[in-house]
Image (cartoon, rainbow, N blue to C red; front, top):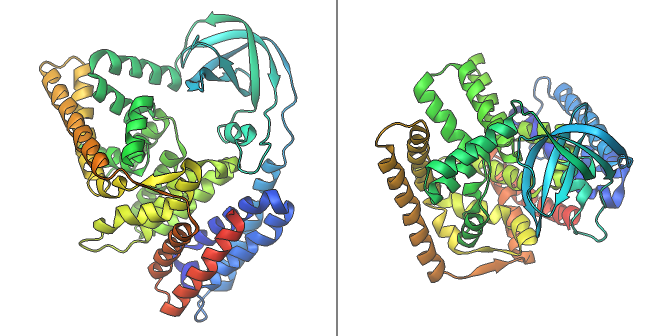
Length: 465
């Protein structure tokens, strides 16, 4: 079993995804039957001959599937939080964001509990310490198939209920990552031009500007603003240049950045993958990228099973699997953008209504361009904030680099103002493309690759649609 030998966690990840996808329709049987069935299907897809200890490793994988399934089922069936009356409670505001025409603030209450409150105005800031009275209200589940589910959305972010605040009082502040992010956001706005500040807020602290986000969505490059392996890789590469190959220092910098950026699912996934690589290098072992993605995906699902329904988590894992499975060739980067767009098409088009064609072209150069732009802007911006003389000229140059991209992207979007809506054929092609890449990565024979593509695509349609 080549899959069992090189990427044993891939079957576990596939099984858990299948179980979670079928949970609403099959209940406990989705985990009791589908998880081990999909795990076995993935493992036996590459069965050829007896390998030493393969059945022992196979059994360990089944046990792991059972433990992970129990964890996910326990969280999925957890009863809603009871409504509580909070009197003279205190806590720290973790984040504030727009929510339709209003705002929502996530509050970590001292002594345990994380709640979200709705406000007509942004009356508090991230990092603020407040005392308050309030009443909690449990989330509403989706009232239709595919509708917005408050309990899953906020549950994936560790929030247990809504809370209505009364008698809000400000408390003396103290150190927190939320306060640090808020302070850094203010400094970026004060010392840097608009575009540089907006891009660095997205890259450094995970704070996206709505207008900038809308532009990149129109260009098909919105993933550039989401902290992911692209940004984490740049930070780790830069840290390696400064501090060498010291795994401990690189690990500290890696997780400090992931936490500072808000610990989005894509950032955590990238952090886990790179951390696995650092550990493997220290132990003198080779790194299997497909298995690393699978380990990261299973780890995130075990920590927060409700994260399965987060579109960012799904897209991050799909894109990472595609990149990891794509064989390295001199011109493979030309295939990267269209292949990732094809693989993620079913999720992107189903959620957002379609994908823009111009993104296929712009994404051929966007990673390299923004790797250069983010590096220059980050160095110049940091030195500018610290008051280093003449840095304002480098910051203005960075502003020009971002403006140049906007001009080119707007022109390209005008030339190719087309989008591809969700359709069965493209969705099937995207699912089949992922199956093909992963199958060829493990060196399966052509007939097996065809069987995996057909069977895997059909199973994916049945489970997810």
